[in-house]
Amino acid sequence: MKIRVDVVAGVLDAEAARREVEDPAHGAVLVFWGNVRDLHEGRAVEAVDYTAYEPMARRELEAVARECATTHAVGAVTVLHRTGMLGVGDTSLIVAVGSAHRAEAFACGLAIIDALKKRVPVWKREIGPQGARWQDGELPRSP
Image (tube, rainbow, N blue to C red):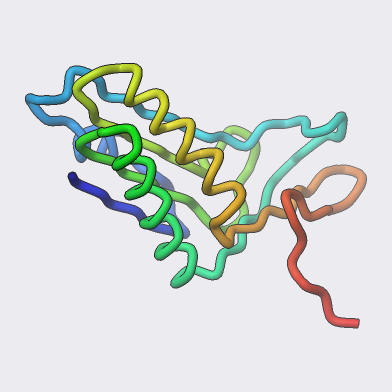
């Protein structure tokens, strides 16, 4: 099983992630792009600022990817999460899965996305015309 994860400040390369999970044994190659959208919970979004505790985020991404790959019997997984200020349409997450069959690839990809939102220390602050607010949990604030 081949696993690669990273948390990066630069632009994510989905094509490179796809190549990493390709193999002659993989009849299914799934690549998911998570992009910044312009509306969330009825509020306009102009940008999202992603912050991560990178050493722990990498370790937890690795654990999530390995668990999901083992559970769903896939051959290769690449997970890349971006940090920093991203505009609408920018890609914040790439999940690539290589598997013998499509059902396992889709199940693994979805499981990774669901688990990383709950377990990986990456926070996002949405910025819009009405101000900024933290989503999916908040960073501790000083009194």
